[in-house]
Length: 188
Ligand code: DGI
Ligand code: FE
Ligand code: FE
Ligand code: FE
Image (cartoon, rainbow, N blue to C red; front, side, top):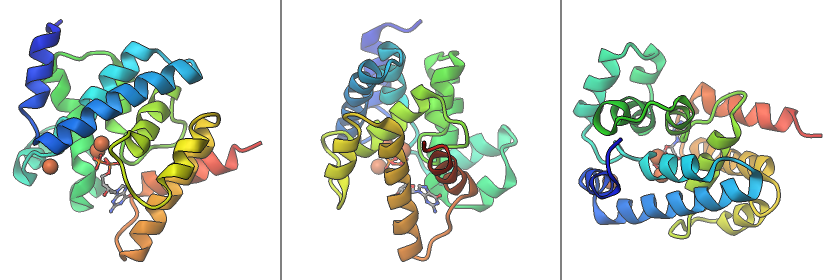
């Protein structure tokens, strides 16, 4: 396993300063959420630190990765904003040496979510929505919910994203919609 200095420098080199500040915020927030809800804090912090590894990569560079790993056609034909999550899960294996499937899944699904998300996946996804540098209408409500109810925080967050996409007349990726429905339909 790569030493901490090298890991920090490697991630730092992939992105501009603002994105790195967000990355540090997600890592710390994910660690705190993991402690609160009983996930592994070390895994949460690492997944949070790596979640946007490819976010600032060029479309071409991400596209190359995705076609070489035969990902679903609907992903390649769809919204490019989603690519960094799927590319990231591949690239952190080869460039960082991450093998833990739980961490890889948390990175892969941090943007869209999916049906049957694990606790670690939820922690990273919610941390991405509420880390201290995030500012958008409704973020305070999601921060409050994340103090006690992770599933509700996540369903409100995904619901807000879906609403935002509809307002902008953008496509909603099937996984995003299915993740939202899954969380809502499981509510007791
Ligand atoms: O990478 P971040 O900016 O930290 O956050 P993210 O990975 O959660 O989301 C990146 C973008 O992806 C965000 O602007 C919203 C967009 N997005 C999320 N789900 C969908 C989506 N865009 C489309 N078109 N469809 C989706 O289902
Ligand atoms: Fe992201
Ligand atoms: Fe960027
Ligand atoms: Fe992010």
